[in-house]
Amino acid sequence: MYEEKINAYFDAPERRAELVEAISRLVRIRSVREEPLPGMPFGPGPAAALAEGLKLAEELGFATRNYDNYVGTADLNDKETALHILCHLDVVGEGTGWTVTEPYVPKEVDGMLYGRGTDDDKGPVAAVLLAMKAVKELGVPLRRNARLLMGTDEESGSSDIAYYYAREPYAPYAFSPDAEFPLINIEKGSYKPVFTKSWPAETATPRVTEFRGGFRINVLPPEAECLVAGLSADAARPYCDRAAAETGVRYELREAGDSLHILCRGKGAHASLPEEGVNAITGLLHLLCSLPLAKVGSTAALRALSALFPHGDCAGKALGIAQSDELSGALTLAFSLLTVNGTGLEGQFDSRVPICANDENCRAAAEASFSKFGFSVSGEMDAPHHTPADSPLVKALLKCYEQYTDYKGECLAIGGGTYVHDIPGGVAFGCCMPGFNGNMHGADEHTCIADQLTAAKIFTQAIIDLCG
Image (cartoon, rainbow, N blue to C red; front, side, top):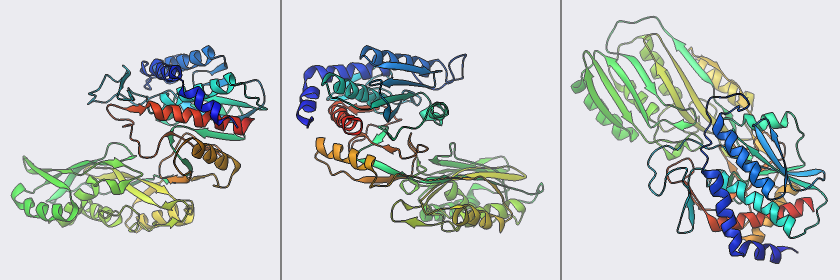
């Protein structure tokens, strides 16, 4: 009914300029989480970005509220709220390697707007605000309210949203344009336990005296290194050549006194997609199991780890937790952190578990496998998130998506978590179109301006259909 008016509204040249300027105002603020200050739970940057987001909303005529610099809200009207739209204004650090522009100096090139946050998630904030403005200026009668939630801690754990919902009720409908189209209705759960093992101090050689691998739980480790006492490079090289051919990793050897330093180089990947990388921890363990090490506690522990996490096993088969279901797919596992010293080790893996996973077939099964080798394990499971594909919200949003694109609307299941993971009935919806890569979290992050305008059209229709 409103499609023609919505298209005409957003196809106007001034709307494009308005969108670019709104995104740019937010991008210019470095909203990376820092140490808290009084009244600023995530530091001055996120608080400043929230102030600017609320200012934008007020300029567009919306009533706003600041929840102690955790979350800011903008209401379309004063009626009962039916819809929450969750976006965030915090960003990851700028990193290195930017070539098109500086991270906080937005720049348009060939229809793309570059800058940290253009894609994640300041661009979507602006698209939602313009959608709310469109509903208002087109004079569409609504029976209920749509509320935009602007958070400030999504990149570091979403404590902002938890703070808000500890004070306010959930809305009947909720979606977050902090992902991709068409729509994500299933997010796998997670199981990320910490495991440890210790042994008496050792003197026999050759033996591993140190091991370090991984730097973040949700990243498949691209590098791992160890020290082996009592082993020369010449003695180890044939084993390295054979292991490299078997694993696809590279080993670099450097003698350090009476010890051999081994650096293993693999390929990093997100922990939810371990098959896209080459795990340096498991690659180094594979090599160590082939070396003529002394029969001591450290050697036994490392060989046990290699048995539990054989190189290339991204499904948890050896650990006894491999499983899948038709809706959410297969369990994935990334052995992502390991440290070893002279008397013990500590490690952690990141598994994304499907809907069918539970305490018995996942947590208890893993603990039983560890116990066979004398490891201690601690950690609980985080439940999957699932909003049925036939829910009124999902059907309404996919209808809006198909109405303004040439793509088929369908539900997606992912291994990662989104802003709505803990919100009953919530889904992730936009803003990226299928196949678009805005280099989120990387150098030269960017968004497609035309796609953001299309997303704004979709959100306008969604607000009308869900609140009208």
